[in-house]
Amino acid sequence: MGTGPMTDPRGRGHAATISPVPERVRVSFLCSRTQVDVSLPLDVPIAGLTLELVKVARLRDGVNTDSLDEPAEARHDVWVLTRHDGTAALPADRTLRQAGVAEGELLRLTAERALCAPTLYDDVVDAAARLNKTGSAAWDWRAARVMTFAGVYLGTAVWVYFLLSPIFAPHRAVLLGLAVVTALMLAGTAALAHRSHHQSDVGATLGWATLPVAAAVGWLALRGWGGYALASGCTALVLLAGALFRVIGTGHWGYLSAGVISGFAALALAAHTAGAGVGVTASLLAVFTTLGCRLVPRLPVRFARAARRRRGTEGDGGPGAVDEQDVWSRSRSETLTRSALYTGLAVTAALGVAVVLTARGTPAWSDLAFAWTCAAALGCYVQRPGTALERAGLAVPAGGLAALSCILAQGGSRLQSLAGWVIVLTLIAGLSVLGIRAHPGSQRLKTMLDYSTYLLTAALIPLALWVIGAYDRLSGA
Image (cartoon, rainbow, N blue to C red; front, side, top):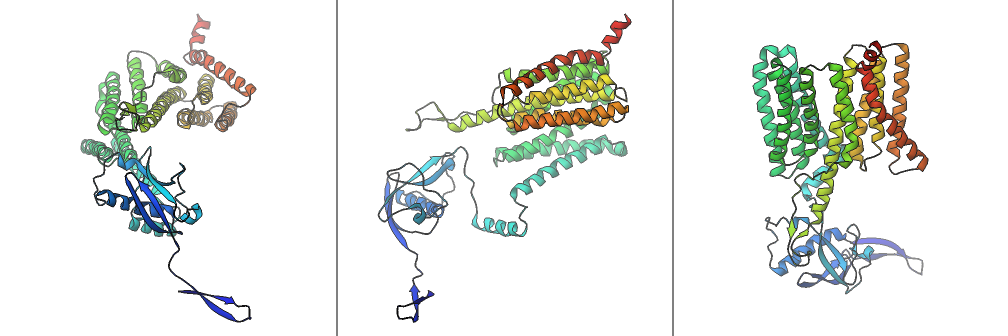
């Protein structure tokens, strides 16, 4: 019992007795075919009461509440309390008193369809997590997952270093066998994580980590057989990416990006082996992939393995009605597909320009001008995609290419070094403006960006001809 000092009219204090029993309200609630009258505490959050009310309703309906074999559809249901004459759900973080529930009111307990299954929590684990978070507020499950993913890719980088470094050349045969086993383990664990445990992010991360190891193994196995063998290895890597996606079932963004890069690398290696020069092959590769970024919005994009579920129960739109989760999955998958195409094309263009910049040792003015134009063109293309994920697929390679050109320009003349810094600062300012401008701004700015995009796109081919020395040959002739 609790006491509190009070003062009576005669000026003498006395103790008032307060009952420890919580104040209750008697209400009725409806759930499917059941109506139950219960007495509920007024000052308990509605989220804590909803679970108990669901258990009571299931007991009244004769359903075993301890059964763990719930149908997959039921896992996507979120139970909410609403008033009988209204449709708005009572806030789950409020109490019945705060929600204004009166004595004798009739409430309805309904299951609303969610796009994804709600997260289930264990009280003991949640309490331990809260204690851990109190001790280290910045460390939560998200940070732990990010660190785990970083550790996976760090291990992948270590394997690639072991395979390619000449220090471990005497043990290369053993390392090749262990690398193949590691790649198979990563692929198997990724498939298990997604297929059995429905952890799509874990499956995608482990599946993507397989590709660098496989690429390093292929390089060691085929590098002594010539350019056509390496081109065949790149083609095999494209097929491997497709096979991993089919086996694992998730992460098509990374596999499609890697497939685009490997496919263009196979074409470039085959062309160079056939007799084309390094500068010609790299510059044409950069031009074609940069221009290809403009064609991505026009490509017919299919969503990747977004299985359509049909609901034929009464009240669900009849047989053949498309589930709302399928619509969301299809839209998300198409966005990821376009982002993967942007990323693959932009990264391939950046790699081609990097080869142009490093082919002569010290880059010439033609090489730097070509690199800056490609980076600026990719930066201007950022304004076309409608989602941040698609824009990032263009902006990140453009920024990396600009930074690389600035670094390599420092090895040239003083004028080249100064021009490199000016160009990079200009590109950074332009990308910042495009990033802040999520929606179309003034018509004048939009027109200026459109003209800049047109001019930069038109300048790619003349600059590529300058890089390969076509103008010198014409003047000499």
